[in-house]
Length: 80
Image 1 (cartoon, one colour):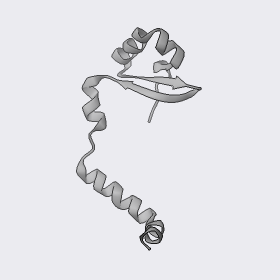
Image 2 (cartoon, helix red, strand yellow):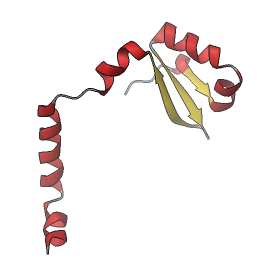
Image 3 (cartoon, one colour):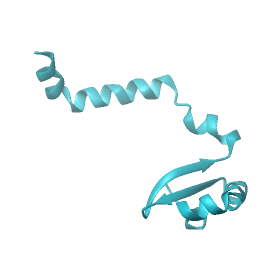
Image 4 (tube, one colour):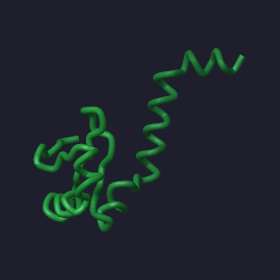
């Protein structure tokens, strides 16, 4: 994920000035709130939420097949 450093806000600043976070989302499409110098929260425009969250069933199936293949040995041990 590419991060626009202009849309990064500390937790303290977000807590004290949430309107700044809202303006960043309006201007850049998202804002990242840092907690303990690590990205913790992503705030996105509500109209983008459905596009960002929805994953086609085919992608989910492909991903699950890859995870199963990568961890086949562990699954076999657990099956015993």
